[in-house]
Image 1 (spheres, rainbow, N blue to C red):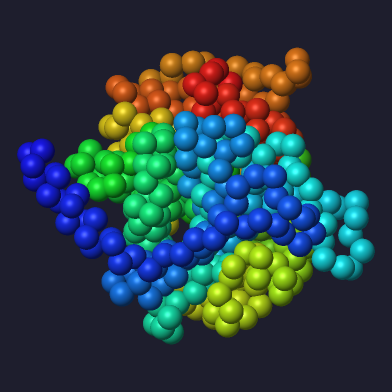
Image 2 (cartoon, rainbow, N blue to C red):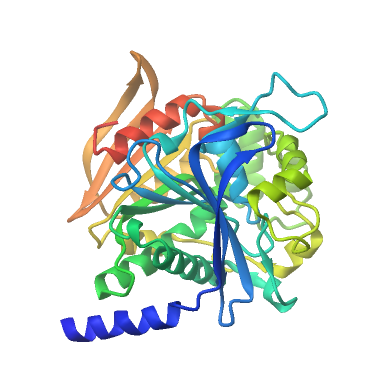
Length: 418
């Protein structure tokens, strides 16, 4: 068996020796200047003929790159760039909102960057996101399942090109829509890890931030959430529940009572500075973006061309989550208690449906003596899951509650109680 694995690994090394990847150390960035941390950008070719070129940002841990965990972080959408995670969520830089004057946006160090304790790898996926591009027009047509395959291929090849990180504890994570991608990707990585596939990454688990886990359950939970938060009246809630029969997705257009009752509230954040910054020619030059590969950069690609080319074919990952409970991995699922895009009601109900044992009961967690949210823990055999709510957080907790998010993940990655 060992001989077979070694032969297989050697064969893959030969196959991967021609990988069309590139990497570049970014020394400085417009709006900030010389970088006091290590930032690498580059492309990795994926797909049968590597026609899809996925762009990435890699930030080395400020503490101990060779020992700290490696986190592959996906942003939601679908169609939102890894740059959004890098500048708005958990990366080492953030915009200085006090100095916006119409010129190149100014950046400053993020005091709550997860890169203080983690190596973080951001990728522009699916294709058509951020600076990623395809060499062929057909390559832009993709879907959830193929995106999982592309990201798996990406991570394998990236680790071959960065062998010094193969032994680091490796986690995959992401928020919002990427909650439909992370669990199947985790299952695929775990199966490859147990089979001894090369490279032998040290896969440990997942981090899911306000994740969409089941589009039907998530959407339907919004109405109940709105009623609980007094965003709609009790009378309207009872009316819409009765008239729509509890189904707020498949609404019959002829059901005029349901149509007139139905209301939903959604909060949108402003991200205009990201587009302005990334479309600056000097920014692209410093990031080593290949000239002529994309036109206008969009933090989140919501163009008709992208929407028409992308097929959403993973509506639920409940089964994948159940499969993970049969592994020795660990998972962190956290959510803002004010999130209405993915209400905690649906997330919590899915977790409780997974036939796990409650190992730590519902309790408050604290920062500086103040309640930061609530948490509980589950386990099944060797699998362990931590569920956390963040007080006052909405859909992008790490943007709206950065200190709480940093304290939470730094404790969890260190195996401390949250």
